[in-house]
Image 1 (tube, rainbow, N blue to C red):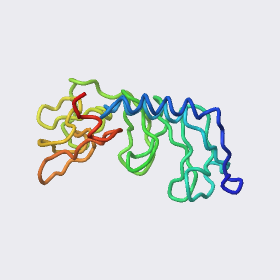
Image 2 (image 1 turned 135 degrees about the vertical axis):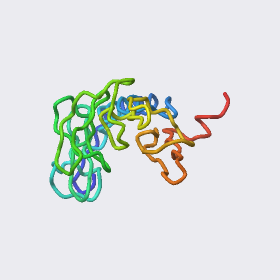
Image 3 (image 1 turned 90 degrees about the vertical axis):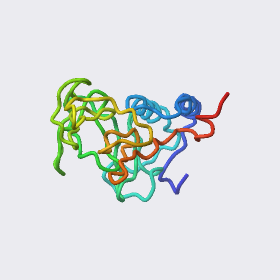
Image 4 (image 1 turned 60 degrees about the horizontal axis):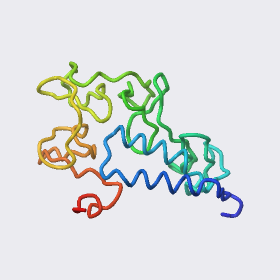
Length: 195
């Protein structure tokens, strides 16, 4: 397969299908649900196993080696990389684009291109700086600039945001102060139609 760059592993077909069924049962996931879904899919969906090791050149995900466990081999910027949900204390990159991210309840301490560390997030309801870009509340939460308290991100699309962290989609139009709709795992018709 793929001129020897990948092999087919049928042992992962059924677990992968089952993981997708579970993922598709959640229309618009919270950040915590999103991380659970990622880990489940990464662990179960290793049907096509690339042979190109991390750091080597690639043009498609399928040729990148699949690491064991809740991780995925992907092709990023022309090189195979590993994506994973990082535990406390692990080095983490600036959260921009497709990168590994800290697990729920954690945040990445970096504010520059230099790596940071996954550290415990400030609890919801606790005091924070009030600065719009303050990520210390962790993904799925934001630092309210008026109340200077960590709050849960609940805006799935609509008015009243000042920063991307206030939106489930992470996308706030700062001119109209409107969150872009949160992406649904399944189609909006399936998610929101009456049974």
